[in-house]
Image 1: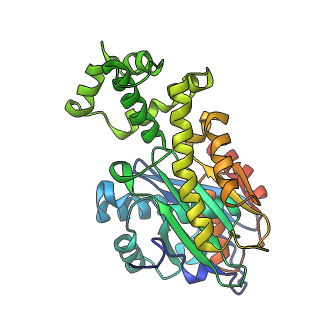
Image 2: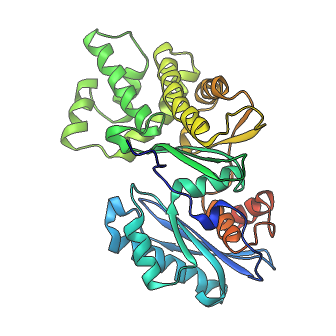
Image 3: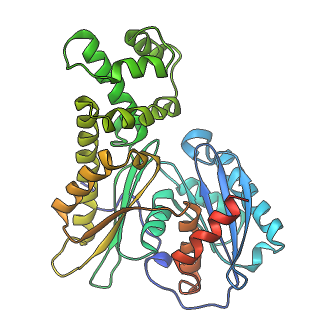
Length: 348
């Protein structure tokens, strides 16, 4: 059995680099629906954005992914009024199971200062500022990544991230599917009654629960459509429905086990390590206490010293922090300073 991490942390990001005089860095957040690029002026504390289409290789292929990434990057550079050569570093964080093909195309088109990483690496930077800790993503899908190394060597580990057919535990899609399953068990009397049944039927606009099941296969319903039901499931759980609450408890245990595995493999749970953050990133955590509370308990069973909390910074912030780290400018801007800058430009 291969014992290497499923996602590697590039050496240039594993430890602080020699400081350069770079003024500009770029971060890119590439996903299955859109791509966002940001150029940060470290001196003036200004951010310039560029936008592109989907850049998840699994969804659109490597060639289209690279076009979206570089198109968004070029737009951000143009709006910043600088050439690509002015960048101290660029970090492109993209969703997908394998980023090697995209990384090769990007290096060929630009320079070695343009790093391509899995989006979970940028999420880790968003959650921890690039220090020891864990990021647990739960949006439409789910994924966990962390970095430890009290001995001075960065140790990275990923758990989850296997997609909606093989994983995505605790994600919006997982909650949606489990809700439909619970409604079907209610309908056939193999499971307990639940308010999820009427909610599922109404949400998907069908006359019956069995019609919802048919639409899953015949339309078929998309991942996003199924994941969107998680908002309703959270409301029903909050109102006290035992089945809905148990569903979130189950998701918390599954995702908590993945977080515990990352903590163990990175050494963050070792004696003497001290406190470290476990950042919760993604729309699934909008469910609130019905999900976050049991997940926090599950994490604390593995590591009582973990500081569990939701992360507010936009994902592109992690890419920018990594880019600053790659050119030795990790002290030029703190996460607490960067986050409001991103919020302001995104809201403009």
